[in-house]
Length: 476
Ligand SMILES: *Cc1c(COP(=O)(O)O)cnc(C)c1O
Image (cartoon, rainbow, N blue to C red; front, side):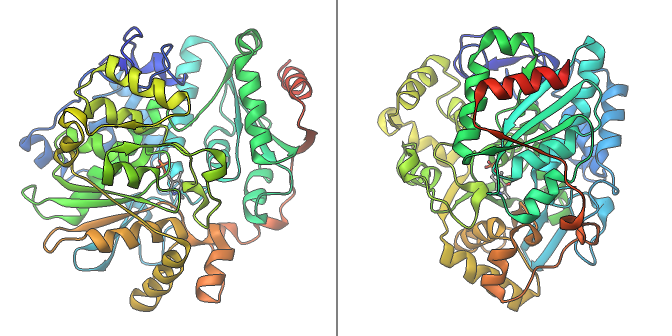
């Protein structure tokens, strides 16, 4: 299996070759040159599989340059009940992504039982083990540099902690993350994890990462890399739980289901799109956004109009606060018939601060054949949905999952099971839960004393040269 760029001007590469990188050299995103397909017989066989077996069945079609025994070992050590242990009472950690039924044909697909209690652990934990494997084979190392306002950074650190050949330098705005998020990251004592608390705001952190990445000589000399949301390995790993959820919610492969996905950068729902292209009987993929509704606007109107910073809102589902949806380009590539020239033209507009409209030539009319629907949720909806879900089902959900459930209830059809992807546990967003329910969320037992653990971090000014020097010193 080779990977091609959505902008059509980069040479095809193997899975291992694109694993450590980000964008293709032409600025596009990598996708398989064609999607593997599961036949009815394949699906029948897969129905009985546990999570690890399913992950191998799916990922072995993508990571064809990793020997099967090695890939199997990597998957087997990643998806264990010990790693994904933060389940609700009554759920089985061995399921890895348990299905929690709210009422007949309405389920939560619980993806947030990993070490940082958010769905990003589903992919990031695999990525950590894949990185270690690929780097060891190549006799190389990598220094991951990132900026975080909380979620992605902690998931990356918990995935890369203690991994040979990998260091993580994670910039965060000093004093601006929640106590829980700060404790989650800064309590890591692993020597390959460097938390840098920057005197500034999140944008300052991101600007530093950009400045370092644009210094190509420094980047090459110091093996600077990233684990951002466009990483193909992350998308690939996320495909697996759509299969797992489908089999858990149905009795036979004649049935269709729909998934509702709280969306930001479009990575999660992009994996659902690919699962569907591979033959999984998905009726609808319901894209749920918060007030940052670029994606809903597109799926309603055919116009994709990324927002500037001034029109990007800070909301109570902060991990969906995006101005542009970085993985969206992957879906548009399929939508326009895999025409790289066309995608290059469209993103030429977007990258210059513009927008595009796909209504011409009947392109947007094709969207329905891909099963997409969408909807928006606001702060008021989140609070109502969290309250109603707790009162009706006795289940506490977080703000992002609440956005998904709100839109799922609007789009649900009789006779089609609806699976809402649970993208974080409520313990991660205590203030919002208190606002909605007037009480504290339950915390996984393993995290009860998190804030009292010793913390390890360096405070630095938002000074690019100083941070470069820090990286050089620590990796010398
Ligand atoms: C990252 C994240 C999302 C958005 O996922 P995308 O793949 O960016 O669409 C939703 N909810 C939570 C809790 C997240 O951390």
